[in-house]
Length: 76
Image (cartoon, rainbow, N blue to C red; front, side):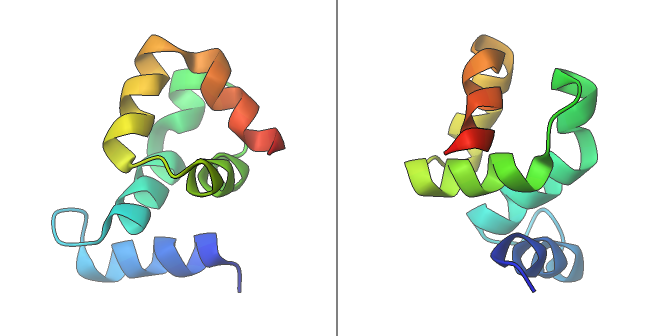
């Protein structure tokens, strides 16, 4: 199982208000990033954000201020 799926399952089990940053990011990406940005891969964005050391809050801000950068996270 991928790290993304582990984080997503952890977030679902614990809940968005109680989970760690990686799990909260996975929940956010799984639930609404495609509605915000279109045809993107939540898991690839999560993996890129983890490689870049982004927090959930930083990624959320980027979704509104620089969606092209968020899309580029898929290719890291």
